[in-house]
Amino acid sequence: MKNNKEFKTWSNFKKELDYKSEYEKKVISEMAKLVVQITSRRKSLGLTQAQVAERAGITQAQVARLETSSSVPSIETVMKVAVALDMTIGLFLTSKI
Image (cartoon, rainbow, N blue to C red; front, side, top):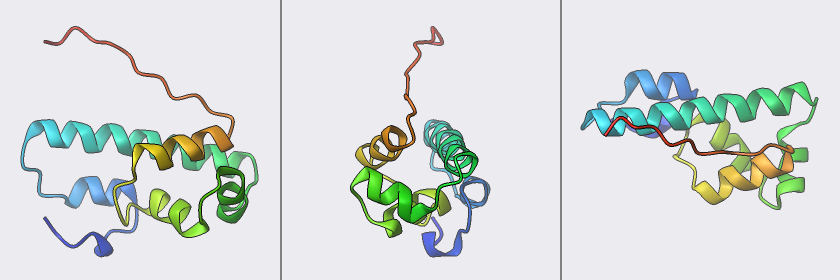
């Protein structure tokens, strides 16, 4: 896998990542979709990363890393940001197995 610091966006991260398996590809793809929605929500509300960070009780750097894919965020960080943006994250069962 390439150095994560080279990536500027989740879509670039997803495109450039040397996937070890189709499963890993799916996980990264789903996280990227979620982050795009979170970032869009922040921007539509006219909030800065610093404002979201304050609401979520995290640092602005954590919000920036979430949005730019400089690291894979913890689910706790994702949830804190989502709640700060009045979003609900849901899981849906599929019968692909």
